[in-house]
Amino acid sequence: MRFRFKAFAWHLFGSASALSMTLCFLYLGWYHWPGWYLANMPAVLAIMVGVDVVLGPLLTFIIADPGKTRRVLARDLGCIVLVQLVAFTYGTITLWNGRPLYYAFSVNCLSVVQAQDLEHGSTASARNAALAPHWYSLPRWIWAPLPNDSDEARKIVQSAVQGGYDVTARPGYFRPWASGAAELRGQLKRVDDIKFFSLKEKELLKARMTVMGLAPDRADAIPLTGRKRPLLAVFDPSNLRLLAYIEPN
Image 1 (cartoon, rainbow, N blue to C red):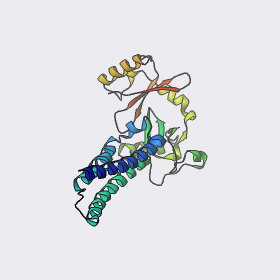
Image 2 (spheres, one colour):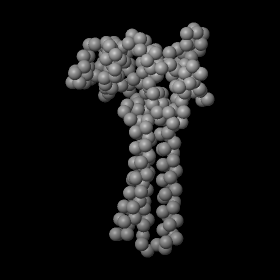
Image 3 (tube, rainbow, N blue to C red):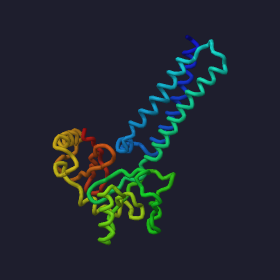
Image 4 (cartoon, rainbow, N blue to C red):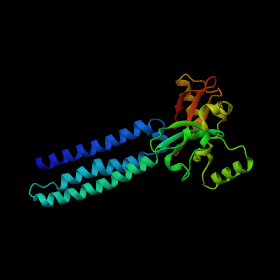
């Protein structure tokens, strides 16, 4: 039994260390709040933890029989590690492809733009090449206005409605965050006037704003959308300094 516990402990330590370092790297670089919430990655994390930290070491505990020959034991452990590596690779690739690259203001809301959301082969134009996405890009706040050309804008809207790429998926249209300050200020609303939340959610948001010392009846908020329920982003209207993200549930 001592041999089994020793094998279990070493396997658990190795698996947990590898997973922790990977998650720490991704979280500090791309998924820090509110990225992890908006990208809705807990399901992927659950698979990685279940296979790499729970199932793998547990199977090692079961098959680690000191009576086995080294060859047989190595074969059994190799099969377990192989399954772990497949799950670990799948999870890491999924997290990498889903990493937040932009927080975009467009039309009437903010939204997180993940790497997998960008139009395939999309690039930024020469005039805003600094906002082009690269593999090493960290999350940036940008303004993604619809083009001035009405026909072009209509095509983008139709594409988005039909499940295609919206303007927030096309870096060629991105502009510096400061360029959209006036537009953003004009879209700030009172919680009660924001249509992205239910009545129950609005009451909860207003209660949380009050606790935080923010005025619920002030036009200073805008929804921040992603793959989960939107957050409420609260700004100081005078200088557009971000004051808080508030969960509606």
